[in-house]
Image (cartoon, rainbow, N blue to C red; front, top):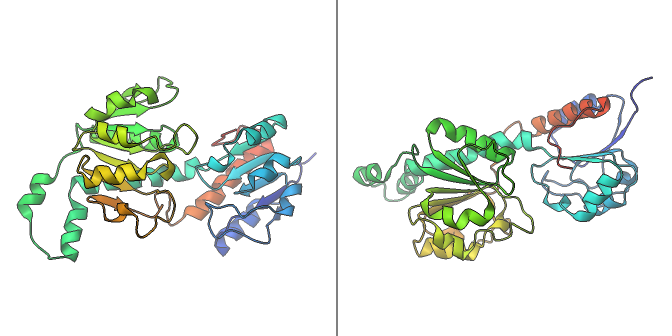
Length: 326
């Protein structure tokens, strides 16, 4: 007897060549698309009648429909984050019918980690400052920039959040011989360097040179980095956020920068997004902002589809799925 044929719902907005790869890759399974497809793989396309009869969802399905569904057996998200599905009713509904939720962490761990490393290296070598001078008065401040450049070797980096992206960040920082501290709610004993719990972060912040925020968005992380914790940071330390904008009290961060209580900040995520043009973080001293592009890369969509098709083969075989969240 052959494998059952599934109805696969997809709201991903992919280029034609990647869409063709998806159509070919699902084989005999039925592939359906909502009438209204979101222009971003980060956003849901909203409720859709076709989802009601689907066995598999690939994209960003409506969370309320997931709860009501009687047919969904597996949901593959096109993101590493799963905030909109991190709900008790969603978890209960999936567990009740033994359905699975997987994300795309293995697609985004590498680009996100490289993006963070790029900024750490750029700041250590004074690259943003030199670019500003090139665009400005074109002064040749050789002594200033040589004196303010520093080596990452031997410095301490606190990694807040140790999922797939945090693990890859640690791997990339390893050859630089940095001293790593991992903040994790439930340490497992396999973390590199010192491991702390969230309640220990206040005692750890003063002696770390780099604070790397890779936290997800949930009730326990909202404004995790607030005024009190920014005040505990070393004045020469740098704050980075590639997690979620909601994990930071942005007014407190702006105040810390304007008052020179921390050295710099690099933000790839904000709250809201886009960050309003008049927001003080845009002009805060030594604040560098990128528009939520850490996970982006030229073959992103192709890798997303390949990741899904790989998991589809595992699902057909009844094998454990990659990047399973629930």
